[in-house]
Amino acid sequence: MKRRPLLAGNWKMHATVLDACHLAADIAKTCAGLEDRDVVLAPPFTVLSQVAHMVAETGIFIAAQNVCWEAEGAFTGEISPLMVLDAGGGAAIVGHSERRQIFHEDNALINKRVRGALAFGLIPILCVGETLEERESGQTFKVVEEQVRAGLAGVETADMKETILAYEPVWAIGTGKTASTGQAQEVHAFIRNLVADIYEKDIADQVRILYGGSVKPDNIDVLMAQEDIDGALVGGAALNAESFGRIIHFQEI
Ligand code: PEP
Image (tube, rainbow, N blue to C red; front, side, top):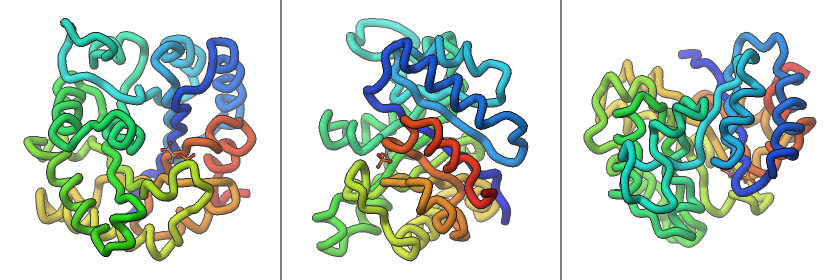
């Protein structure tokens, strides 16, 4: 089944207001006339509304890099789904490996974020992936299964149609090491089967599963040629309009 490709740029903790405006404007130029794929930008919270404003007429979607589950309250340092919507965002990355590894967010917390996002109409982009140690000790599928099942616990079938998954092997993020196409496709197919098991095949056929981990202009084409890879979540290469532009235009050039 053909799913609409989605190319997402995660800016992580980069970009002042000025940098963000330049980058967003340059990326918007490369997206002119794009009709057959979705582009998502996930800037830091501080520039979310400026970037959303800049790309408002371009068809580019805006995502937050994380989201709380409550509308408001005593949650110092958190951003609510309503605030993301108010700033012009429509999605939120949840469970990024940097949140899991550096800030010790566990599956239960990530599940609250996924359900919180959905409750307010934001599309969650749920990230899963194994560490190098887990891969080398043969635990990849076990870890990924736990993260997918726990991350999606309580998510209704109707909401699952909107939810986006991202397989991001931790050892490939920001390291310059990309999973081989075989390694990536194998885990993507596994995740899709898992979604079919938890929900139904029809949902699994529709759900978009992005690959993330050192995606670059020179490996995007071959990654996107894999049956179960529906897009990319891009970190480093998304901070440069030319390289992200090439990624957006995969298999065209
Ligand atoms: C990411 O931030 O999700 C990511 C995959 O980063 P990079 O492309 O730099 O590996």
